[in-house]
Image 1 (cartoon, rainbow, N blue to C red):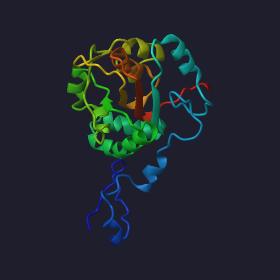
Image 2 (image 1 turned 90 degrees about the horizontal axis):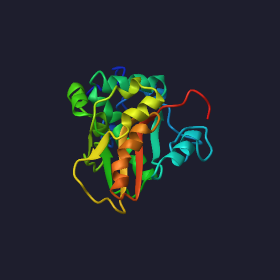
Image 3 (image 1 turned 45 degrees about the horizontal axis):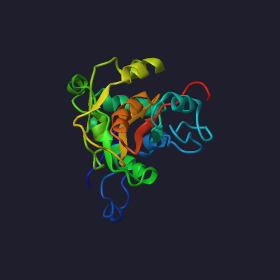
Image 4 (image 1 turned 180 degrees about the horizontal axis):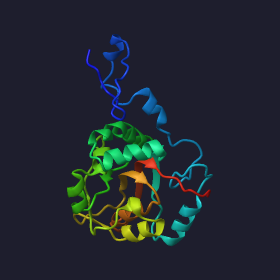
Length: 233
């Protein structure tokens, strides 16, 4: 029998009895210990951005709704961005372990179908070409591998890495950063954006803007992880 290793800690995975293996479509990806360190994004959440421990709407979304010309982008995430998830995303994005996308791809597609049924197309949020060349892959595209996804956006402008930016800097960096590859009419369409982490929402809001301007009826988003504010809302 082939021995499979956990994608994170590389320890051998315990296999179910042989007759159960017949019904498995794929080998397990994580050991029980690593799987238990993932913190599902569950419980009371902001109805817009998905921040936990909020009834109806968080303060950030209330401010953003007053500031923006278009409706808010409703977002849902698989997991909370805890220390284990931080290390996992870092290994995935910055150490080139693209195979880790498999941990999230299936569940992200299931989340999208459950929370946003009937979306017309899924769009991975792109990297700037220079960043794509440095990394070798776009993490959002890999996370969206189970979707009928289309690369409809281009990123215009190379900024400081968002992971090292403050909330205001993230907004400034993201503003005007995206445009449609080709002019199109998205009237009455529901667009679903895909990314790895939701932090302040600035990147997702900026990526949604070209679709709003092209007449989209609705723009939603799913991510693998949701970062938390340090201070209570």
